[in-house]
Length: 80
Image (cartoon, rainbow, N blue to C red; front, side, top):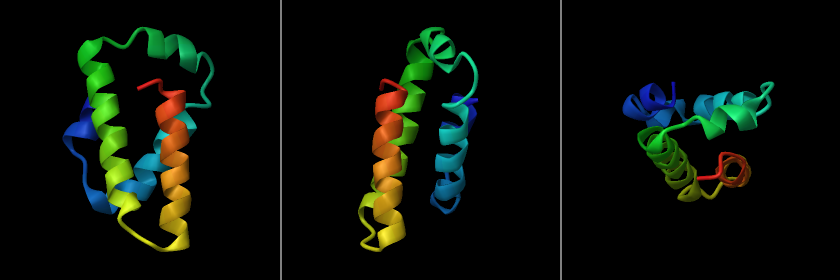
């Protein structure tokens, strides 16, 4: 799923992607699922989160800055 999201990334979908990744992180056994990611999946996850960060960090409005904070926490949660 991460590979598909990263491969089809669009800035217009950024807010929805953040919400989706945030929801995934609350799923049962999420940390176990992370342990089974291979190197390319980890790389795709890292790229996706970095793209999301870069999309919102350049905006100065309050909502974008809050989204940057959420993305930063997702980077930590996803351990990438």
